[in-house]
Length: 98
Image (cartoon, rainbow, N blue to C red; front, side):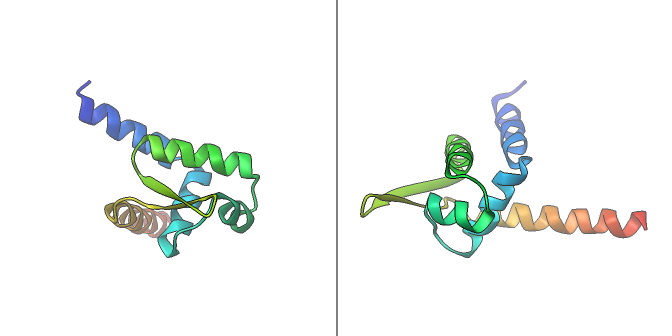
């Protein structure tokens, strides 16, 4: 398998995790710390940290340390566009099925 296809499949696998999807949707709105994400999504800090690590590994999010806390954001706006297009696609499937 060509490297680009392999990497694309990894991105799909990680974004297929509902928690990762929620994290990205939350980061659409603004930069957040892992603690803020855990509180907003309602999951443990350990779970959120694991998801953020996976998202960093596929180069979707970045962070910087500010006053002893990591603040995360979406690295490239194209990720937002991809997810919005995916949601529109899912809506068309839902409408066709009913």
